[in-house]
Length: 276
Image (cartoon, rainbow, N blue to C red; front, side, top):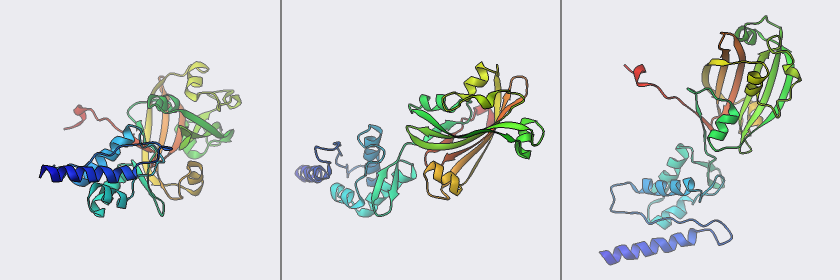
């Protein structure tokens, strides 16, 4: 019995060695499965692939072994191998490209919606390099919705700032912000390609923020949003509408942000006192 297990292990290791990238590419190891364990085979495969991803041996954009390769290497059915890959996909760690295979996905950015934080600080706290591309920065007449949120007259001048937000060079959100020009004179003269909006509000205008009201909804991306976010049209997006308030009870800004559904997820921590 022991000799048979040893032979199985050697056979599995030999097959997996054939799957390893050549010396010109990154090498990674795959341990034999424990077929005597109560842990399902698909879960053992998933766990090992996930370990390789988290350790950086498999990186975003790398191809994962195919169902056939996993099936042959691990001595399991293709259905079991498919289950392992689909499980990684459902958790957001992998994506399937028709006709090409399954690839490691870029990690999702987690947004703590219980904590008010600017995009730059938020990304850096997650170990990502933030950057922005200004789409437009101009004075526009306030729409009825914007006027209501900023408590200004309809058609009064407001500063509109639209930016494409990127993390590690990849687009994650399209952000539109509106501020009253009467409340923030000269703001339309500033270059927010290099300036932090919140730092400017704090240091130049003396604004101290007390809270933010946010509304979250899920929908499909419009054609323009899909182009900017580099996703197929009608892909899922997370939309956050926000109004920021100062400590003296005045609205500071209103914003509308569209986040890639495959790159972003909202995290909400609920205190125990809120549970009956």
